[in-house]
Image (cartoon, rainbow, N blue to C red; front, side):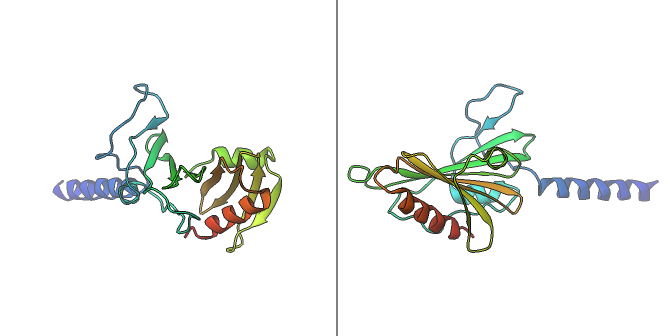
Length: 182
């Protein structure tokens, strides 16, 4: 009987340990506004380092941004049972008086916005990242967007209020940022 109890405890520990690696560890995160019992649930912004400690996947973030920027915070949104997550951040220019615009990034570890954009062909051009990943570019005048699927995640990279750039310049800049994401 004792042996069965030890075996059951070991099995339970194995199950709990394997589940922890696939779920958001939200113990130190503070919920922002949400409806009790409903999704999505957003948490207050946290540092990149804190984000890396609590999410169950490797989020690839840019190593290159084409201007000096404020240190970004990341908003984590739970779309379901701490497993379907969205990360959102902005790289805001340090000198907003002379230069406008910012880089926005959303990462999903589940099918969401990017899959829908690709499915509905909401892009103008298909490009290729340095690692061979197919990326999709859309230009809207006041912002441009590059999105792609990689490592079972969806990436949506936007240059917001980029109207001082030509479409060609914005495309080149977004590609350079995307290629810096390891």
